[in-house]
Image 1: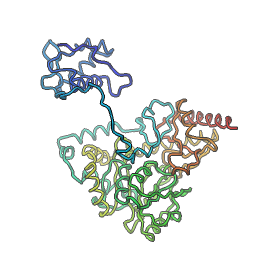
Image 2: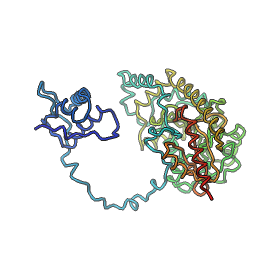
Image 3: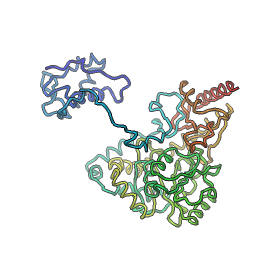
Image 4: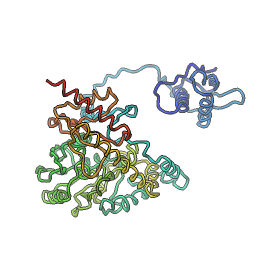
Length: 491
C-alpha cells in the first residue's frame, strides 16, 4: 500500500528546518500508527512537488529516517516504512479526547499557578524594537567556538561525563573552574565541595528558599524585586516582608526583626540597577550577625560592570558563613542554557545536594562539560569582553535618545548592567506596553516587580541587550510619542 503525498502538510510557522519538519511528520505518523510497516512512502519528487520544497530536502529527510530505522530503501523501488521501525502504541491516539472530570483547582489547591510572572512574548524576535530583558542577541554570541566545545564534549574521551549519572555530584572540571577562576573575580574563596550546580539562578533561588525556609518562617525581599522570587517564597509558605530599596539598594536598617533570611541583588539591584555601596554591605553583614539571619545574594549581572570595576560580592566580605551566593551563566551565555551555581558552607551544600538529588539529580553532563571547555579555553572571557563593549555602546545610544526625548530615568545604575529603570509620571505603563506592542515596540511594565498593593504603576524597564544598536533611537522615539499621546488624553 502506498502512502499518498497528500497525507503530509507543512504547518505555517512551524519550528525547525524544512528537512526537520518532514522528518517529524514521517516519524510522528509511524509512532501514531498512521503509517504501517511495509507501506511505501511517496516518491521524493512527488512529495517535494506537493509540499513546495526542493527534492533534495525530501531526499535528505528520507536518508535521515533510514539512518534512524524509520524507513528502509529498496533499490529502485523507493522508500518504505521499516519493518523494525519503533512500534506504534496498541491504541488509537487519534480516537478523540476524553472528558476531564477532575476539579483540578480543588485537587491541586492552585498553589503554583496562583503566582503569575510578567508576560514576555515568545515571538519577541519578530518585533522590530524589543526592549526586553534577559534574552540573548545572536549577533554577539560565539557560535563557532561554542559548537567546537559541544563537539569536543561529545567525543569518546568525555564519554563518561556525557553518560554517567553523577548522583549528587557535578562535573568536577566545571566546578573546579568556577571555584578557581570565576569566584576569585568576585573576591570569593571557596573549595569545590562548597559549590553546587543548578538549573539557572531561578532553580538556585528555589533550592535556597526550600532549604532555609518553610511555613511560618519569615523572609525579607527587596521592593521592587525579581517577580520569580516572590513566587518561590509564596510556594514555600514563607511569610514575606518587603523592604523598599533606594539609590543604594537594600537599606540594612530597614530589615524587619525576626527574619530568617534576606534575599538581595547587591551587584545590580533587580530591576532598578542600584549597586549597594561597600559600607552598606558591611552594615548588612553586621546586622545579619547581630540578629542571626542569613543572606541569599543573587549576584545579578556582575559580569556587566563595564562602567566601573565590579563591587566586591557580599560573600567575599562574609566572615561568619552567613551568605549563600548565587551565580548564573544564563545572562552571560544565553538563557536557554539554564546553568547556574550556589556557593555556601558545606552544611548548606549538603542539604542542597540532597534536595536537588530528589528533584533532578544534576544538570545534564554534556551541558556541564561543554561550558567547562568554553570557560577553560578562554572563550567565555572573550565573550564577556565583547558583550560589555557592545552594551556600553548601546547604553550610550539609549542614554542620548532618552535625554533627547525627555524621558525620565528612575534608575540606571553606575556600574553598567543591560537596562534602564524608567518612570512615566501619571501613565499606566501596563496599558502603555499594550499600545506599544501594536507598534512593534516591547517594553516591560514595572508593576509585576513590586509587592502587590505597593506598585506606583508608572514605572517600566527598557533593556538594550536584545535590540540592535541601530534600532534603539527610533524605538525610544516611538515610546516617547506614545507617552505624549497618553498624556494628551488625560483630563
